[in-house]
Amino acid sequence: MVRLQSEAFDPGALLSGFCQGREETGAVVSFTGIARGGAGAVTRLELEAYPGFTDAEIERIADAARTRFSLHDVLIVHRIGEIAPGEAIVFVATAAAHRREAFEAADHLMDYLKSRAPFWKREHGPDGARWIEPTEQDRSDAARWD
Amino acid sequence: MVRVLLFGRLRDVAGWRERLVDPTPATLFALKNRLAAEDLALGEALAAAGVQAAVDRALVRGDIALAAGAEVAFLSPMSGG
Image (tube, rainbow over all chains, first blue to last red; front, side, top):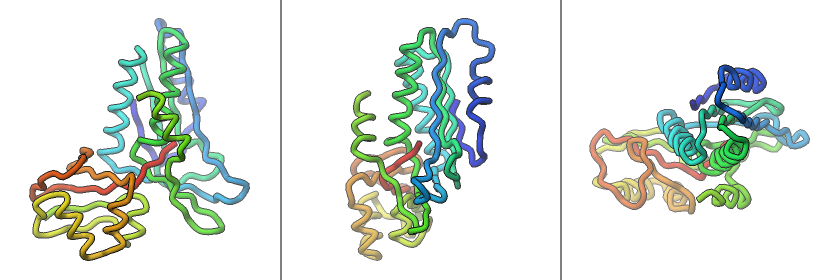
């Protein structure tokens, strides 16, 4: 399931819910991304999505990951709108029969979300606002899975 | 008439987020040329590396014919997570 939301979320509660009612799943891996403050340089993050496009693109990648890594389930929750430093911005959980698939799928999905998912991120701080674009590292991380 | 949407830094360059273009340009490239003719800076930004286009919420590579009522989005390089 893919969810874009402007409200804050509790990663622990999402993980607990995701683990429930699984008798055949041997492994659940989760990743939580947290907005960084940059030692005072960032007072808030602004994240924009293209409704009807961003969610569909992420669903497509989640479906492909489900097949590629033999996942039992996947959950992606991504914040949009304004996010304060210290708040969770993204949560990914994967469920599989064994740990390797669950780890790899979570790693793959995060690499995709960092550099290819249609989001636009802007940092606001004392020195004004700036758009954040994927780094070379982000791009080569994502290319590992091509 | 087509609806044009800008995302990311393109919006700052153009100073708008959404507008209607009428009459309907024949193709995506014709639309780009028209926007560039009105705003040189936007034209340069649209031609920059990493800028993608989506027509009716599907990514498009190269040129494509535009139908009246189409929604065309120009997407600057993306970054999530």
